[in-house]
Length: 189
Ligand code: 5GP
Image (cartoon, rainbow, N blue to C red):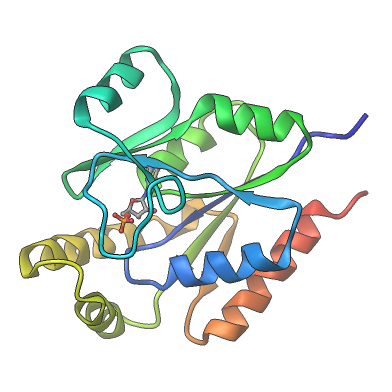
């Protein structure tokens, strides 16, 4: 019988370069799957339903809250985000390791559950770089960017809740660091 898969939870302020990092790590490990979250926010240009997120209505999201179908969920920057409890359970039971890219509120919910997890926080090089990245992305309005930056400052104060803190100063180095965490944590005893 195969053992349980490992649950990796990654959080970072938006603009920390987490999506790029996560995609690179995923491409290196077949045994690691990505948990596609559900959100009520509108898709950005180039985002695909079922790949980046499952884009669902507020009604649908709230229905699933009432049915207790979310492993964790949170309201982030005025939108709702959630992880399917069933999907996570199925993967882990099949021995498939999973990577969740979720905010701190959601990570805390999982830390407080009976699930065994490996938690990783990604820190951006500096606040200036973070702000520049959000502007360069060109996907969010000024108001949304201001909200994300304010949230990022708050989020940085919570990094010590996580088992690993990885600085994304240099993308390749951060990828290597994440890969070595994954290798270490999934190594058979
Ligand atoms: P974005 O809208 O930029 O894709 O994501 C905004 C924030 O929502 C990010 O910090 C991301 O990690 C977080 N997020 C994405 N999916 C989930 C989820 O399923 N649950 C929680 N709690 N946060 C999520």
